[in-house]
Every structure is written in C-alpha cells, then in structure tokens.
Image 1 (tube, rainbow, N blue to C red):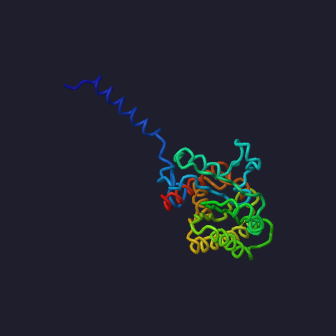
Image 2: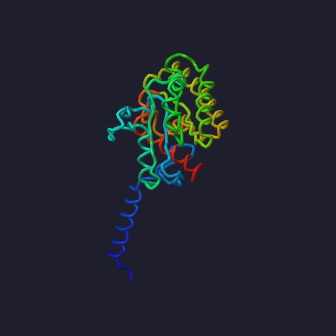
Image 3: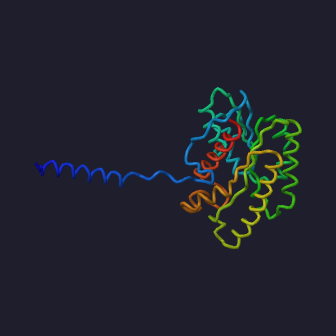
Length: 256
C-alpha cells in the first residue's frame, strides 16, 4: 500500500543526499608533472646522522639564521624548512642534520668562491642545489654557468664519491616585474637554457633532477602565476611547499 508519508520522507532524504554530494569538494588536482597532491611518498632511507646541505640563492636562503644557536630561525623559511620539518616527523630515528647555506643574490660563481667553507668542509651526505636566476637578473648572462656548476659538483664528489646529489632547475613565472612581455620572454629563454644545463649535469653526475620550472608551469595553469610566485622569481609559502613536495617525492623514489 502506497504510504505518502514514507514517500515524502525518502524523497527528502534523497534530496538531502544529493545536496550534500553537490557541496562535497572535488579532490585536489595534481600540482605537477609527478602528480604530487599530498605526502603519499615512500620514506627515504638515510644512514643515521646523515647531513643534508642545501645550497643556492635567496629562494633557498629565506633569512636563515646565521646564529645557529638560535634554533628558532636557523633554517629560514624556505622549502628547506618544510623538508626538514617533514623528515623530522616521519623519520626521527634517522637523526638527520639539515643545513641551509643559501645566500641571497648568489650566482654559481659566488657558490664556487665559498664552496670550500660552505660545502666541502661541511661534509654533507646529501647536497641539494638550486641556483641560476641571478645570472639573468644581474645581466651577466649564462656563459660560465655550466663550467662553474660542473666544477663545484666535481669538487664535492672528489671528496665523497658516495655523495647524494639533488639538482633543481631555476624557474620564473610571468608575475610581478615579469608581467612585461618582453622581459618575460628574455628571462624565460635564459632560464630554459640553464634548465637544460641542469638536466645534463644531473645525468652526468647521477643526481636526482627536480624539474622545477615544469612543476611551476603546471601549477600556474591551475590558478595563475601570482598564486605561486609574487614577483616572477620568489615563491610565496605555497610555492615553497610545492618545491618541498616534489623534492620529497623524487628523493624518496631514488633512495628508499
């Protein structure tokens, strides 16, 4: 027998369920070529007490505290901090030592001039390098980029043949000062040339290669460049998070 009250009740429940489904947010789209949409990576394997050293320019620097006794600020506020915090939670038993030696304004030539003190003498087990954009901003070109980069990697491997290397491509996006079409075209052309050099060096030295420009290009297509990089060069917090996720994904895939 048809019960109108039950019919209305079921109809109301169905309508509520439909409305709830309509309001359920869709899962996030992947944020890069590796489809990194979270921290679902395998944990990397490190020998206990391994030392991780991050080198680069202002993107890495992010005001890391030169006074290492100040443990509130010694890593700065870049992707380095995010990587260290994640690994410190996930594999605390590894007792990792993480150091930031990024220096604002640096080129590869600047890295080379301080490499003995800030890299060789620190005896890292893993060395991560992100460098290049200042070769464009200073107007000095990229003529010596490959030779200087190869030299510092060669020197590091000479003293530690088991050194793990992670090389990140330099990157830019058309935001801030790089909204100007002519400037954007010129900067991007040089950055792409350096990216090809990094790819070549990564293959030569057996390094993990993080295709950072490709990652930011993919992310930019979702929401626009200003969401990730405010001035064409320097990432916002979410931009640093994007780098950290891909770094962890690639490093975990290689050394697990």
